[in-house]
Length: 510
Image 1 (tube, rainbow, N blue to C red):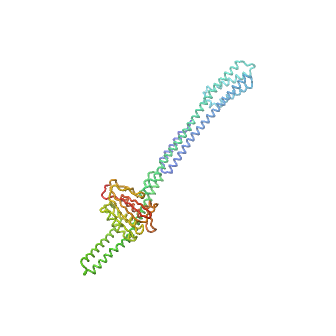
Image 2: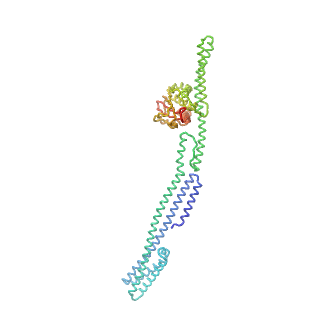
Image 3: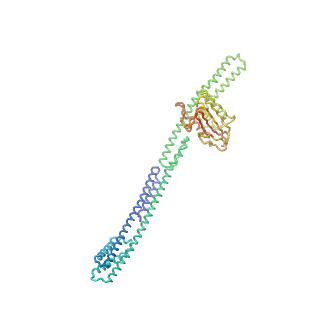
């Protein structure tokens, strides 16, 4: 019924396979999807058009058969009028209708061949001719016999039976065509729906899914982990985007490293100024003791000379410690995790910050248990505490800072509600590994709640322009992550800030 469909299907399949093999971009995938959808709609439209042509043909066939039926029924009616009323006009009309029916069979022979065999059609035409002859003889005879009327009725009845058979077969065929059309329409709708769903799922898998995966791929970068982006798609646009994005990450990483070094040098400059001021005290004491020792060498008692010499030695050791701590802080090298005595590290850090402490009239109180050791790089951890304690001391005038540490434990107390955490709260530590928690509290001006989530972002600073680059806390969180630790911060504006540090203890099981 629908010739030529199979070649069209084959052509569409070939086009689909060719595009599936060659296409590599989102644009081409979307284009082939819409072309395939257009081809499917065109194919279904062709089905519908051919079906409409078929129905139109069947309706025309029905009209022809109905015309034949009507002509023969009218012929029989005129026949009855002839016999009842001896109306020769009705007889002539019956002859005309018989001729018209015979002509209709000849004219629409192809249609009637679908409903009856050639022999039956020939028999019907022969019967019509015989009927025409008998009616003509009946009209031309002076007297009509009963046998002539009976012969005409017999021929008319035979014609009516054949016509009724044609009508029945035609109506059956028309009903079947309408039913088939219904099925074709339903199947076309189902195929269209299935095609749209299949193309939609294919398009989602090939285009939408990679785009939806992109935010998840970018999440580590949003969290500050500048690793290369890995492309999970072979589309040209996605590959080009990934390559360009990775080049941008490389450039950002290079710039970030330079900025970090600049921030470190800037912080070092601040420390140098403080240390230079701090070195004046031991140097002044050394100078004074030397002068007294020189002047009173011959007259001073031995105990007094020993006291001056002891002062010179202790102040020299103090100056050496300051210089050693400064050199350790400024040295740039790869992180080397070793056991670090926490109390000693914080005492040295406090010594380095005496300049900023004195300038801001602040105080730092250390409450560190003796013998508490953490695993880390001393220089990097000192950089962490220098940045955090300096920020605390400079958060106001006369700020009191307290640093406390809890002994190593495998079960840490939960952090307070409302803290901003960088890193997982468990610090990625093994459940059996011990950790220590260091708490730095200050009585400064605090941080507004809306700004708290941003304090660890690079280049974020609450200082005035020119007073810092906003990389101090960013460096801190990077160093903490290098040490497999975490940092959290909470603050109440006007009351102060509390910072929680968690670091693995030395000697714990990993």
